[in-house]
Length: 354
Ligand code: 5GP
Ligand code: MN
Image (cartoon, rainbow, N blue to C red):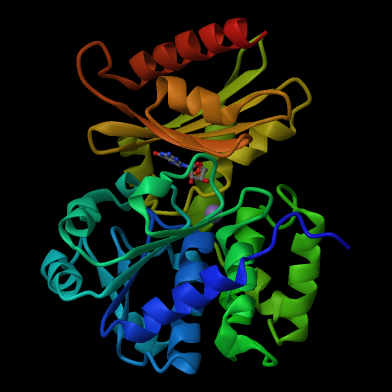
């Protein structure tokens, strides 16, 4: 069966050589990491440790902490060797200053690393990219593995690891299949979107290699705190608006989030729900975070969530799943102001796209 892409052997060998030469490696992903971001970081770290003698040489560098739903993936050693910039900027600074290699996973642009961006720009260490978003900024990276016909960074990373000379004739190391399958599962919304032929082949191989899908599903989808479902009910009942053009919008302000005790990552997936309504073409979920609203967008085929995010919300992402932000200030003070702004933007967008 033809694969939509293949990993060039010399590129995989170059990746391996850089990792072998570096005394310190920084494994980096985007701010507010999701399952794909965390899964790919952990799988890479474990591969480098198990097969390239990198034990103690790797740190996962996060701008903001991993969501609770994927905590089950971390071993005690992974926890110790993960540095979180928002909690301990000094430790991240110290590690990046002496770093001999950075690997960036699940981002197409250094600005997605949030507060850490300047540290990478200040370092002279080589940068490798592994990503599945459109329009990567290739010039920022010495070596870039970028494929969009793939479910997730985890799926792409699987193929890179398999192409490493050190993997020839061997299975993946023990700790790799589970985080990889977790990332594929979350980025496809449990195999509802972005599933390619190759994705299912990769998953079959990961299951064969020992990944326990039931355990993953149990942790990701069946261990939510009750408050998440109560808030979901509240938002669907009270906050969901659907325009006659088929734009669904739900807005969660800071006060409501606090009242429900909602933590980072606990509204994951909310944006998908209104998209299941027949007349909805675009679904937006907005969540206040300090002095801005973060925007999540999902679209049905034929409508570009990515263009909407890029044009109005300083963001981007994939064709059918994107995100961005709306800073508060000026005319935008209240939740109602933000709702009116979103209505204006989406109206204009749909007119132009029609
Ligand atoms: P989510 O709605 O799950 O937060 O994000 C959906 C997709 O949009 C993800 O693939 C993510 O990479 C992308 N995305 C989210 N926020 C931003 C952003 O601020 N900038 C860019 N370029 N992409 C984003
Ligand atoms: Mn991803």
